[in-house]
Image 1 (cartoon, rainbow, N blue to C red):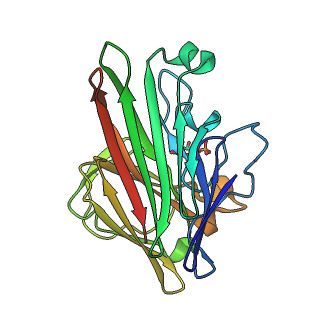
Image 2: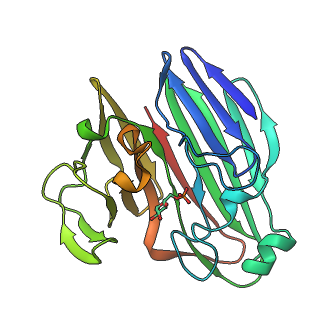
Length: 249
Ligand SMILES: O=P(O)(O)OC[C@H]1O[C@@H](O)[C@H](O)[C@@H](O)[C@@H]1O
């Protein structure tokens, strides 16, 4: 595990899954880790800022892709920033035989956490992927308001229904919805007078997920608000690099 510190903020990053498991501001946990999370590599760490890559959700390969259940390599680390990398191995090639390099830099500065992702195509053919930062926010589910998606086209993955967002999103039952062409800024009220400003760059969509009583033990304590590119796959040309970032403050 790599720990970062800056001012009143701290962060923790696990190389298994390349996941930020903790971000605190003045002692408050901004992120959430589910009580059923395992840190022994037996399954992906369920919480924090996990990767869905190179596949968002279910599809041809395992659900949410493999980036969250393999070891990333530490490239560098300092007091408030670290960089890690993911390259193909036999396990990933068996599922997705592409020559990729994924680099993520995690940093904390001025009480903000920034995760920057760079996907490079090292092969000679274009490849496509979908993905997200499946970010778990500590929240009082009854107080959650996701603001900024008004006007976006939505797709309710539970009801398989399209729609349009007309008001801030609140949680009154299970939600697994995709919001297309999301704006760069989303404001998330988490209760107790706290909110998180989520600034995305390079991503196209947003996703909101709450399992509701499917996860009876913990659903009241978190909501996932994801920066994603999943409505349409991203194409990366040979030698090209796709970049995207998420800033939480
Ligand atoms: O439970 P996981 O694998 O960490 O993923 C969290 C959830 O992510 C959501 O996007 C999926 O629709 C759920 O099915 C899934 O449970």
